[in-house]
Length: 226
Image 1 (cartoon, helix red, strand yellow):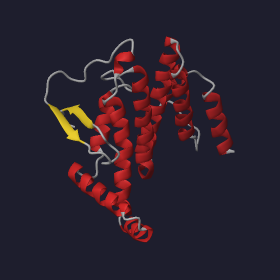
Image 2 (cartoon, rainbow, N blue to C red; image 1 turned 30 degrees about the vertical axis):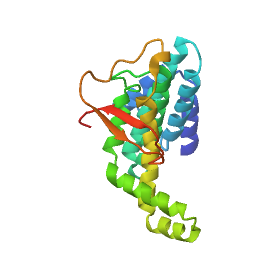
Image 3 (tube, rainbow, N blue to C red; image 1 turned 45 degrees about the horizontal axis):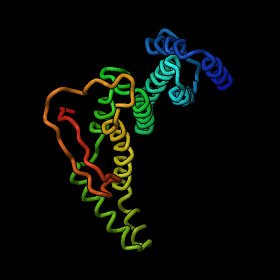
Image 4 (cartoon, helix red, strand yellow; image 1 turned 45 degrees about the vertical axis):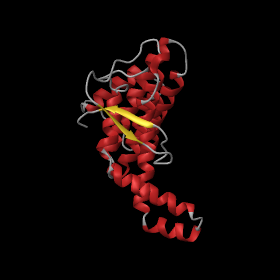
């Protein structure tokens, strides 16, 4: 009975427009609105993500505004899930930042915007690094060498003994893809180019050799206190 009530509530909620759901969420965050037991928060985030992406591909300005509204719903729910489910927090934040990267590529960057601020993605990446840049290069080179031997048995042994390191490298590669998408994007095709991230400062160049965590270009970003 409880699950049926929660399912029906989500179905009815998703029939409303994004503005209505945003209002409902604000009341929930302020503890002014009760939520049914076993409410499917992930379902709300996933449907909102889908709506945001579909509307982003339409041509009207109204659709784009609705896309951003759905994206804000999705990112706020993913972050709520990450905060309340530590075991899966990385997965939820990855989904949130992936959607942010998608919308920034569609609409450009707006500093301070809840969805379109590039630094939300950059800070997330650097704040969650569990390995140094030099250590990552060394481990990546070590793995390339192991894979180049074409010895499945030895490779499997290495994988079993260094599973956590391998997972960290894969996670860095996946997240770095989102960072590079928005930092290295050419926004000149947009009607309103994004504002500069920050005037002045010294640029830092981190060379990514071909094959290093999947990179083959030079990653440039402004020096900041991340």
